[in-house]
Length: 160
Image (cartoon, rainbow, N blue to C red; front, side):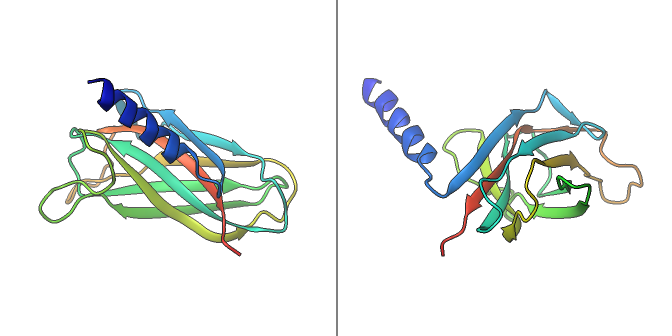
């Protein structure tokens, strides 16, 4: 038992020591992620010269009943410009086994958002993430999405 706790602590320390990461934050989702609920992140990039890769990170548990995930991700620039994307991510293998990492019920997924981004405007950027799931054959979206426990956003400096 004591060795297990030590191994878990060591794994967490190693996972948190990503020298490329300049921003990495998670926000918890209540029991269900309502279709109108927007998860927001405010980023102040360290410079306006280097390139960065951007990721949407999320954790899901066994209550998630889909093999994919649709998200609307909006990035608001400091001087008013806005980029909005509808993205689809694969969440499970054809067998139903969840993708992602993790030993227990919760799986962690690091999903590409944008690569080689230069934050060419000085100031704060806001990233808004909203679920946009629909069931096959149904016109209305999923109102309360179950099984997503945390949403995160990560900015990593690229290797130059």
